[in-house]
Amino acid sequence: MAELQLPAPALAGDVVRLRAWRAEDVPGVVRAFEDPVIRRFSWRDEPFTEPEAREHLAGQEWARSNGDALSLAVVEPGDERVLLGEVSLHEVRPTRGSAAIGYWLAPAGRGRGAATQAVRLLAGWAFAELRIARLELTCGPDNTASQRVATRCGFSLEGLLRSHMPFRGGRRDSLIYSLLPGELT
Picture 1 (tube, one colour):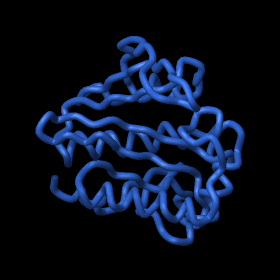
Picture 2 (spheres, helix red, strand yellow):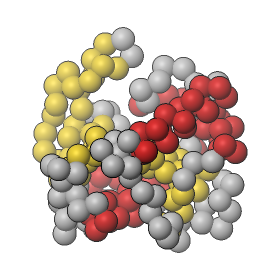
Picture 3 (cartoon, helix red, strand yellow):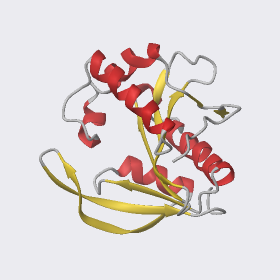
């Protein structure tokens, strides 16, 4: 697949700015994944070490260069050194016009609309620039914060995917939401 280009100009609102990951973000990623809320819903059982966080960010760049995913740092609009979280497109399938969207927030980003604004910015860009016709969002049935973000952005709940994915040595159900062009709120 073709490389996914970074949004230019950078996507920004009054609550967040989305930008490419930088080497200086590694300590912020490590700190974020020490948070029990992130670990509760994360694919990772343990926090990142600094080498693992560097490897993770390098993997994100590799996926972007191969056209599979686009992961962006969510930062303070007035101070890009303050890492609030991540928003990403993954499972990008241009020929099918589909992609999935995901996000996580560090404690400093919660309770202020950061995830909602980040998802809105990236979803709007994906519809306009990548010509995505369907965005999917999945989350655990117990992840009510993620469900609220999906609803605020205009995603429609489609159902429950039973035993959807490997998760912490077992399998996890997922709720699946979708968003079509024109539905973003």
